[in-house]
Amino acid sequence: MKQHVELRNHPAELHKFRLRLSISAGFVLILFLILYARFYYLQVTQQEHYQTLAEANRISISPLVPNRGLIYDRSGRILAQNYSAYTLEVVPSQIEDLEATLNELADIIEITPTDRQRFKKLLKESKRFKSLPVRSRLTDEEIATFAVNRYRFPGVEIKARVLRQYPEKEIVSHIIGYISRINDQDLDQLERNDELHNYRGSQHIGKIGIEQSYEKQLHGITGFEEVETDAAGRSIRVLSRTPPLSGSNLILSLDLGLQEAAEKAFGDRRGALVALDPNNGEVLAFVSKPGYDNNLFIGGIDQENWSLLNKSIDRPLNNRALRGVYPPGSTFKPFMALAALELGKRTPEYSMSDPGFFSLPGVDRRYRDWKPGGHGRVDLHKSLVVSCDTYYYSLANDLGIDNIHSFIGQFGLGKRTGIDIEGEVAGLLPSSAWKMSQYKQKWYAGDTISVSIGQGYNLATPLQLAFATMVIANNGKAYAPRLVKQIQNSQTGEVEDIPVKLLYSLNLKPKNLEIVKNALVDVTRPGGTAAKAGANAAYTFAGKTGTSQVIAIKQGERYNEKAINERHRDHAMFIAYAPAENPKIALAVLVENTGTGGSTAAPIARQVFDYFLLGKPSEAAIAQLAEPAADHDHHHEHL
Image 1: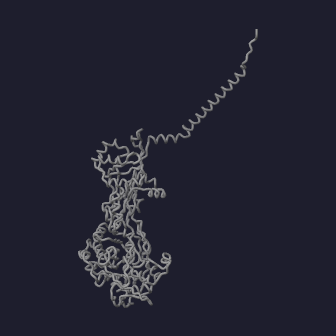
Image 2 (image 1 turned 180 degrees about the horizontal axis):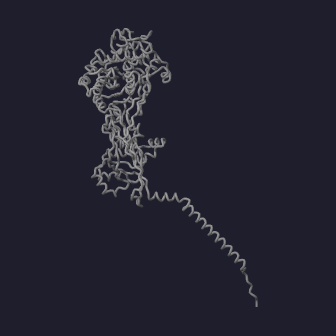
Image 3 (image 1 turned 45 degrees about the vertical axis):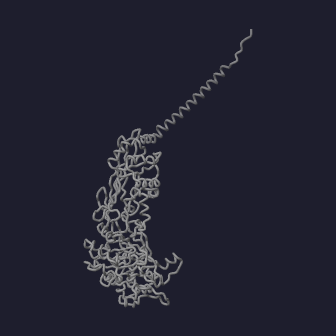
């Protein structure tokens, strides 16, 4: 019998088994250690982070938009205010078929073609995840109707909004400006200024005028609410609230009554008027005609109204007082007269014979006076009263352009005044260096002749002319023009006065100033170019008429207003201050394409003076504007 042989090695197999078991146990232990480490990381190391995420699912933070500050005139009349209203809004990114949704909405709430045009314009300019208004100022009935049908319109809601309103519309549109929806350019600017956080939830920002320049003061400080929400995102309760701080209120130096009187005096004429207080630079009136309804821009202007404003031949969006540049015409002559006296080129007694033209030595060309045949013997006083061109042709040739540039530049012509709204244009007071830089040409004596009567390269804004007139009126003090007089804290009611800013004082000889100022008074008396405007005035005022040339007249030809297209006719200019002995108001008036300063611009100034000093415009000044200009009143400084 064979013996059974055992083939298995039990000790070796047992060792292998134990080894495998140890490896498996070690592997499981490592897995548990990894799992433990992960739990520790999530529960201990990242506890604060995940707790915040969990809270974020339960708690939402909503920005609270502050109420925008109000704007008043100097007597407390409201110029910009807020009102509460309900708006119908959509979030485009949450709607599949936007056009179909709008059509369905139109079945229950009136949506006009204008509303649709405005919405489409906003849609192009805005991001699709933003809530965009379709209709504002919903009635209670419309709100109730939508509430019943709300389930049909995901991505559509009614929101309570505080909206802006400008009750005076066109009268102050170029001063106040407007707010409009924040665009990408605004967001970039806010980010650069580190102010983006303060505009969370805000949809509007100041675009031009006071609304833009004082945006920081008017906007206020955004608040926020912590709200607990359920799984569906509905609010359960408010956990905490930091209220917003309303923007500050602005009190302007503007006299709305005076502004209205000036607007009425212009009637349908195009032009501008700026009136300043010569004792501190406060802006009393600031007119640009025509204006526009700034309420149109608040929710985003529709295409139809935008086209009407933007393409209008009357350019209502152009702020003529701030940005319109015109040859100053003979309103330039008082500054030339002061230059003559201060620089010793003329004495008050010096006189010259005016044959009605001036010629440079050795040159055949004649530079004509506005009056054929001339004014006879003319001294400095008479040159201003009758606005003698020939006197200033001769004077300019003796002064030279660079003396004219440096002296008259002291009165603010050719540079920005620094008024507290943006967009001011500098104008142009030429010099030989400027012409070489601009045109690579030398300056000619004939160029100087043109400049001497406010023509040629000479350009000024109505604001600059009012500023320069103020400096003459107050004997050389140059105050920075300002529209905002006070800032009122909306929380405390405390009012902060904006300090008067004296830019500089000119060291002018009192005797020379008196000579020029006396002549400017006589401009408004019998024999002067503004005699009609000054007739029977209850106060004494000083002024200077001017005619701003629009198109050139050929050598040897005379200006014939009736033969020229209305848009190519001369502009009327007038600078003035009153009362002459103790000036309280200084102004510049521009009336486009109406001829001479004495016939249209000066009577407007007279009406403004009458209102400001007496309480109402005189009937004589009103009647004069309705009269056709007499031939002797048409003095044109064409070369």
